[in-house]
Length: 631
Image (tube, rainbow, N blue to C red; front, side):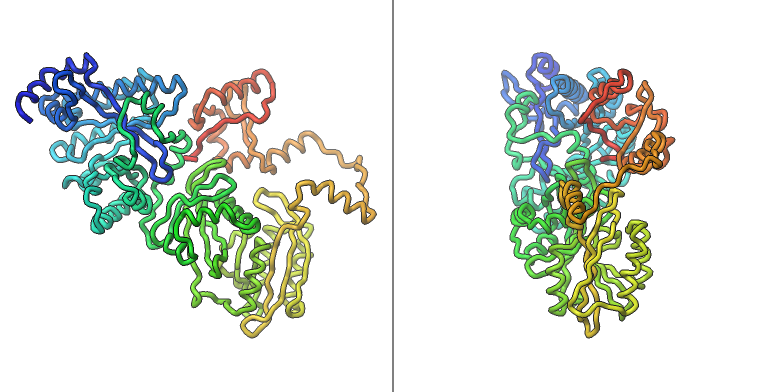
C-alpha cells in the first residue's frame, strides 16, 4: 500500500466513522446439518467518496499499527447491540453475532468492560455474542489474551479461536486457554487434496476430544461441505453460503436461508460435540416424534448403507418415510426408549436379507425435536449363532409382528434376546438361567395378579414339558409399559428344532384390544356377548379426596407441580422431578422459574401462571417452553 492511502486512512478514519462511510455488515454462518443461519459475523466496510471501497485487509492493519483499531471495534460492537436490541423489540429472528476483536483491543482498552456496558445498555443477553480472536494474537501477547479469554467466558460470552491452522500458534493457544470454538482457516479449502482431508479429520477428532465446537471459513464447494458434515464440522462460511455480507435489516429480509430458533440453537449446540471421526459406523438422526431422518453419517456408516443397496443418505431417508407400519412401530419404540432412558438402546432389524443392529442414543432435544446418535452393526454370517434355514425363516416372519422375541434354549439353560422393548436387556445379549431370568422379568414387568400364572407358564417349558415341535402355545398377561400402566400382552411360545435339539421362541405383542382407540366400548360389547354385565358400585369402597390426591401425585406419570401465590414452588410429583433430573425436591422448593433460569420466554409463562395462582382461573392447552439441563 502506498503512503498516500495509508496516510489518508489514518487522517480520515474518525471522520469516516462520524459521516457513515464506515458501516457494519453481517455475513451469515450456516449450520452444516440443516443449512439454516445459526449466526452472523459482524464486519466493518469502508465506502469512501474519494477512494471508493477500501478493503478491510488494507485499513485494519493500519488502524492496529496506529492504536486506533479499538475505536473501530467499539463502533462495530455498539451498532451490533443496537441492531439486536431493535430486532428483539420487533420480535424478528435472532441468532448469535460474532464480533472480531484485535489483540490491540486488549492492550489499549478493556473489551470485557465495554461489552458488559453495551449489553446492559441495550439489554442484549451475553449468549447472543460470540467473541472471535485470531490465533496470531497469542504470538506476542499470550498472557494478556489468555487472561482476557478467561474473563470473557466467566461473563458468559463464548470465545472462538479464528484462523485456526493458518499460523504456528494454534495448538499452543488451545493448550493455554479455554476456547469454546475453533474456526478453520479458509486456506484449507484453496487446495482440497487428500492430505487436506486427513489433516482436517485429525483436527476435528482433536476438537471433539477436547469438547471444542468447530466452524469452517472459506468453504467453496458442495463436495467440501459434504466432507465437513461427515467428519462432524458444525458451521460453515464462505462461497458455499451463496450470499454476501449486508446490513442486518436488509439481510434478514432478502436472505434465502431460514433462521435457527433459540431451541434449535440449544439442541444443535449440545449435539455438535458428537464425534463422527471413528471406525464405528455412526450417524446423527433428527426425530420429530413420528419419523426419523438422517442428518449426516460418517464414511463407515455410509459404506454400511451401500451394503444394503442404499446409494445415498437420500435413498435411506426415503425408505424411513415409507417403512411398513410394523417396522415403523418398532423403530418408533426404539427411539422412544432412548428418549426416556438417555442411554444407548438397540434393536434388531432385517434389510435386503441382512440382519443388523441399529443402536440409538438420544443426545439432545425436547418434545417434537430430538437428535439421536446412531450406530449400525451388520451381523456377518460367521457371527450369527443361528443361521439355519428354519430359525432364519421364523425370525424373519415374527419380527414383522412382535416387539419382543426371546430364544429359549433348555439344553444350554439360557435365553438369547433377539429383540426387546419391555426388558432393559439389549438385543443380541443373552441371559444364563432360564427360571432365574423369568422370575426377575415377572417381578419387574408382570402384573402382581398375573405373576403366579406367568411363572407356571414358564415353568412348564423349563421343566421339559415342552409343547410339540412346530406348535404354538398362547396366553395373555398384563405387562407394565414404560409409562407405568399395564397392557394386556399376547405371549406366543413356539417350539422348533434348532442345532439338533428342541428350543422355543417366546414372542410378545400387544393384545388386539390395546391397539384399538375405542377399546372400552368394544370390551363392553364383547363382555356382554358372553353374558357379563358391569358390576354395580360397591358402597363399602369409598375413596377419599386425600387418597385420590396422594395417588395422583405419587403414582401418576403426570408431571405435576404446585406453587404459592408468588410463583414459588411448594411441591412436585416424582414424575416431574424425574423428568427434569432433579434428585432432591429441596432443589426446587421455594424457588421461582426465574431463579431456576429455565424459561425460554418468561412473559407468557409468568402471565399464565399468575392468572391461575392469583385469580384461580384455569388455563387449558397453554403452551410454554423451558430448558432444563440443556434440553
